[in-house]
Amino acid sequence: MPFIALNSDNEEVTASHCRDEFLRTRVIRSDFKCAFCFCPYFARYIYVDGKIGRAPHFVIKGEGHRGNCDGTPLDVAPEVLSKLQGKRIRENEFRFPEKLVARQRPRVTAIPPTESMDTPSNEDIAKRRRRAGKEYGASTFTSSLLQVIVESKTKINRWCYSEIAKKKLGAKEGAELFRETAGSYPLQLFEQKDLNYDNAFWSGNFERLGPGERIFHAKHGVAIVSQSGFIVRSEPLPASPSLPKKDKQPLPVEVRYDGESYDDGQAPRSHIQLMQELGGLTPSQAIQWFAYGQMTREKDLLVVHLKTLDHFHYKEE
Image 1 (cartoon, helix red, strand yellow):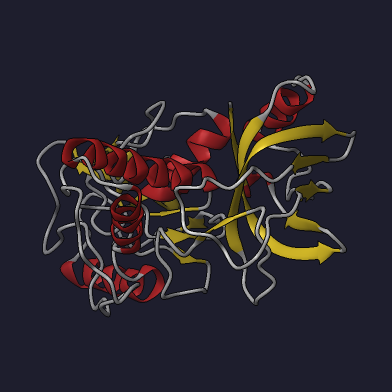
Image 2: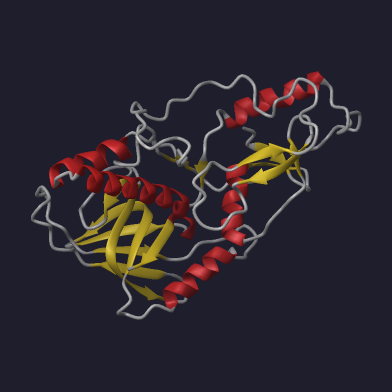
């Protein structure tokens, strides 16, 4: 399943990058071609609204690849993202991103004057495929947007709720099903490996001051928006008597965002829209939020420091 292509500007891009950029800007691009043999491609599961449920990729358009090319990198070292590889949800029902990564920058590919896009040699094709193998590694579904990760976590939770109702599981068995299922799907947070869709997420009302960022989340968040950023505050909820008691007591938590700089000086459409939406909320409109960042503590207040709006997602309650 090809995941690397050249766009109409001869920029080398991945399908995951194209998907993220579509969600940021809503701009649709076409005229893709194989990054190795230059056969024409079209995009699949990239320019789609809503939850896609499949890994974005490219599909051959026309007669197919040229020469000794199949659209995939060569000499790729196998990568194990998690020791837990059990699968409960059928592969053909959903595909989960396995890495939260930095926003990718397209690489401009210069075609030598002696080389034709119509008749690339097998030697040149193999050379480009080997370089891609070193640069990109395995075909892994990645995303630089927390929204895509959260949508996958939501899918896992819904599947678990369905199984709990179907099998009439109790609170203890249900909690174990959530942990085992989410824990079987790897999720690398930048350079933090050995994480999964269970331990990569952390309840924002409970203190976590260890090294490394996590995806914090909380409900009943109230947003206060300023000209340069925002604060979202969530008071702790009463603990459910049916759930096991935690060692630490819940505390109020705030997500703090102080703005960010952009390479071209212009915020993407998705960032502008997010700030407008938060600014339009009334104090009585609470949200459930997710934020990737580092947590600190200020007396009896927990603070999650948000560096970019790419790493924030919310839902109205």
